[in-house]
Image 1: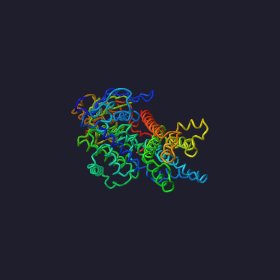
Image 2 (image 1 turned 45 degrees about the vertical axis):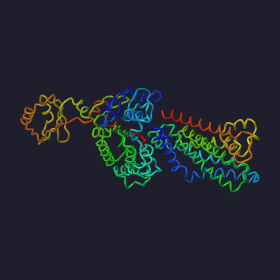
Image 3 (image 1 turned 90 degrees about the horizontal axis):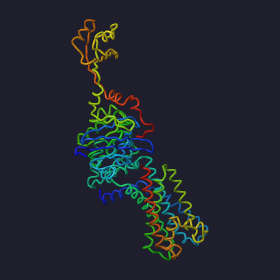
Length: 245
Length: 324
């Protein structure tokens, strides 16, 4: 088998997942409505500083958009047996997983882009930088989708995947500077926030839209998001290979 | 590996923790034949097939499938084989046609041929009417047929069928057997696992019998049956089957080993070649008139029971909770 046939198989696996799972009403609503509801709650508390919440809101949209389905899709397919169809095809296990992760990342990217476009009609961002914004959105999507993939291969049941995904997602909302700036967090909590990918997603998006900050420089955020993506993907491949025997 | 072999297995072994599921098995499958892997549930059939298809890593041993090493060149192997797992496992959310097109894409079928090939397979499996029906809405038999069709999209030279007719009604099972024969006629090598003795007898050119992870014997169905034939058995039809002491009279003839009554017929086993002339004369002298003589051949079931020491009921037990 050639690299070209492997790449084609990866593309078709992603495409099938996008069509079958991602752009379905329940997934769209979970990916968009939940972050919007959270943002609305904070807006009602402090309407004047809403623009400050947009980068975090985008990061959160990617987090929920990418992981809501990605975190259960492999578990679900393994449960019903259809995942085996992919394992029987002439594509490597690493290829199957990257296909799955790209599907989730694409959805996260599209949904967050839609939220971004909508926000452009409402807010005037002082430092709107598309060149910085696109890598930030793409790498955030990949990191969160890889996180979803890792959760999906680490458990056996769909409900376990959902529980584990929420165990990661909900603390991240409050510890990653989405609503509360990380510099104002107590030191022990701030240390935790440096281990969470949403911190770097929110910070890189903030640096692409608002006044640049030096808490975590843009390129460091980008580098760390790329590292999260690779480590989580590599871990997913290893865990799945071990689970399959 | 010889050129005429589709599969060559050499000492293949699989442990699940401390449990030895497949124990150093050896066998060859010739190109173009139908090879049956017969054994009771839990014998190691599915584990063997999963190792040969690259779904499980062997603990020890080697195997060559379609000319490639399963440990070093598994992606090459996967591109050349078709696999029908025990569970019909296509995508519920896709239609019959979409499932086949997706499989064409995964197996690298050129774009210009995908739709044509998918339609041809739907026709072959008499599923044209279900072209746009979701997989989830198909009957068990149709799901099985579509799963087999999906394994054929890339026209593999070797196809693995794991319990192909298990859980199907009689008509669906018969249709599938016809399709398996058609595939064989086209030159496809078929490797099928089954716990159905009669299915193995009907379809296979060679059969490997596996019990508790070990292959006990590999041979043709005829040779297996012949190997268990110790004496000639005949079924005698009588004009007057209710004569008193008939059983004892037959048994008293020198050369008859065993006699048993099966309704109005008498199943008689001879020691060596039966002396037909003296035997029929002996019966006639006692007023016994023979109307028919039917030589009984040992069945695959007889062979299997003799070879494995297991009974038929144990073989036919379905796995608990098996899905279609």
